[in-house]
Each structure stands twice: as structure tokens, then as C-alpha cells.
Image 1 (cartoon, rainbow, N blue to C red):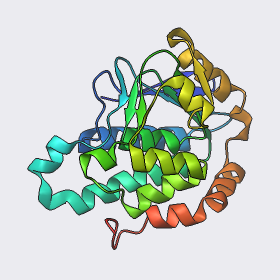
Image 2: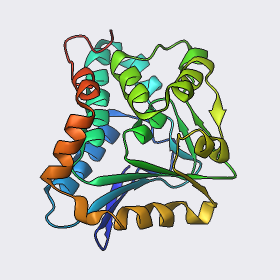
Image 3: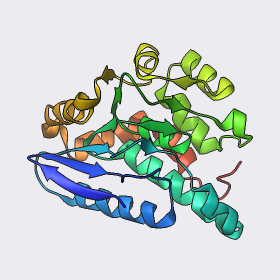
Length: 223
């Protein structure tokens, strides 16, 4: 399960050591951690990271198949996680030490910056291959955070991007060695801790107003 630690002014949210899929309990734990970060006083920033082979494999499809009647509410909760991370009033950095697939990749896009391991692991939006269309909110998030041609390729072809390719196409900001992923993310975050607060939150809310509105549309989140 996710756990929150603090290194000086940088909060580090470890998403877990498994596939880190979006089980409802996992979503609740992440939300509680974001509450703590948001309510803290003074300079601060947030790094999300994980331990093991995966950063996150996205939606918990096993749980969904067993709780199909809760699909609408589940998607609303996932959308709210994306919206909250996108508009969080602190600088956020995703440290991708392993695979980031589907909603896990989208979650990384909701961060301000991304650092990825260069030699192993993939960033991928596999929806075209697994026959699950992007929700309007998911599409809005991806299109707001990637260059048009990159978004086009990633969404339509389900290409698996290694770290170097992800950096070259602007999906991530840095591709580094395995040992440097988390430390680089913390370094980036530490340099921006004085930005935290209402002004940063307002800037983000206005930058991404259309995307946030789509993500927070609870009447028809599935399109």
C-alpha cells in the first residue's frame, strides 16, 4: 500500500512494491497522502515513486470485473485523482523506476515533471490494444500534457516507450540510471519547494481549466 515519507521539504509518496493498480483501498490511501501534503505549511513539494518492477499498471481490472455495478463511481474517483494531482498547489515529480501503463501512465502525466529509468521499463497507453477507449477525461488529460504528434502516436498505436524514447518525445523530462531516478526527482522537487501555495494552485487551475472541468464532470464520465 502507498506510504508517505518526508525528506526535508520534499514529501515522497511511495505507491507500493506490486503492480500498484488503482484498487479502491489504494485510491483512498493516495488521497489521504495528498491531503497531508496539501494541508502542510511552508515550503514543500511532492515526489511519487514506487519500489519494484512497476510504477503503476493503472486500473484494477480484476476488481472492476467483480464490481461492475460500481464502474461509474470508480471512474469518477480515478478522474478526481488525476484532477487533484494536476492542480495540486505544490510542484509534483513522478519518479518512474518501472513500468507505467494505461491509467498509471496517465497518472504520471498529471504530475508537473517526470523522471524515468533509461535502460528498462516502459511508458505505454495500451488502450487501443486492449479495446478500452479513453474516457473524455483521460483523453483531455493526455492531450493537455503531451505534444499533439506524441499524443496521437501514443494513443492510437499503443507504442511502448523506453526511457530514452520517452525523453526524446517529451513524455518524460529526464531519462537516468536506475540508481538516479528517485534522487533526481527529489532534486527537481527540492529546487521548487518555495513555489508551494495558493498562487501555484491558481496558476495550475487556470492553465488546465478545460481539462479539469472534463475530469470533474460526474454526470457522464464515460462519454
